[in-house]
Image (cartoon, rainbow, N blue to C red; front, side, top):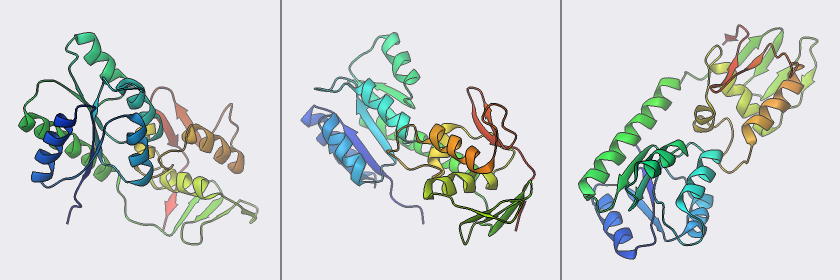
Length: 237
């Protein structure tokens, strides 16, 4: 059974918050609401949110700043909801990482349709990346035990991995020879929501543990403007 999606509606207009929440709850979604960026951050810190409906014009921290902040830390899809109608605002919102953009006044049924569309795309992305669970991976002389959470180097020595390094290496080896974007790595749990600059930092640390030259890596390669790829042949058992 597909779990009920948890949506977060962020808008400083009380009537709009109530209207949108009522419509979405009637459609079967779990809904949280926030009137500003501080409340939005608090909800994100204590809940797993599947999609955010975000107003641009908010008191204090504006919607674009919040959008950029969310996209830097997670893969949560965002639908912008705003009274700004100029094309430049729409383009800017999408460039900041928003998945869709809807102007006020709006029809609740249209917002619901857009939410369903974005959630379908997000779930399809994850489904395409799902793989059967493996217990062990061998690559370039290394042995990676996914059950015991141990990494053994070619000389038979155990290399200690942090929890974050283990999660990242697991995602990379299970999807070797696939370019994984930052958004995909976040969505797959390679790093956890809220870890600033986590992907670049963890890739650097993991390369160091694997003896992979950061200037000319042969195991974890950077694909400019696309993401990372784990290139060695991997035997998964």
